[in-house]
Image (cartoon, rainbow, N blue to C red):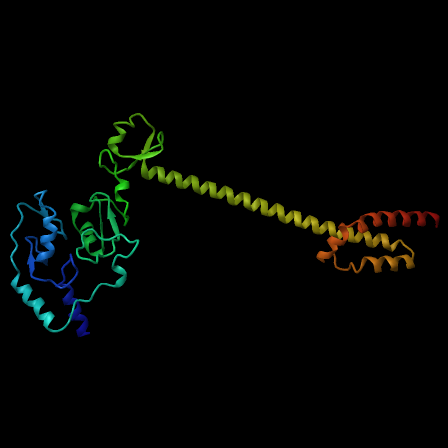
Length: 295
């Protein structure tokens, strides 16, 4: 139980950017701590904007804060290192592998696997860096989708806006500015409404296909029953015809035709379909009728 408490404390001393124990920890004005090299790397990418933000809560700072080393935090981390304990690494499955979408905030050679992508930020986030979108009011209206590498495909190439409208006239997704521009006067609906309609149509098509399949299956079963019934009627007719023959002729016919006690025998159909079954049946029937008349 004591070991579990130590592990929980260690998590509090991990950098949310590199997910490792803090190295030369510095603390931002909003109270979040990072490795100096990690936060400097993040803010170096924002030099052109002139606005710097906290990777966790996204609070912005202007001008760039001059961060100083957090000596107390550095001492605590150093004590953890001296005990020989290391921060428990994330599960292997959390790292982005081939075909996975990597987190856009993680730094270093191994990035965490992104869980969600934001259509407003145009970035993908792992579980750790996704938390501000759930906790900060500033991100409440952001549109999150399952992590995808094709974020740019969801953005209008002309206006850099989200493709949230569907033009039925041109059969394509467009942005709100497109509706007022080249698609003005076209039949448009929201992309979500069009997706729901397409799903409804697909469901109806699948239902019709399934219904036709069941109908064909029923017709096939009825045809098979008709064939079996025809086989039985032919066998019964032959038995009746043979029963009209004299005893000596009856025995010869039974020996030639073989046993017919099982009309469901698959070989019965073959025996009934040959010229022996058709021509001789007619011949024997005519002969039996003429013999009966003479009597």
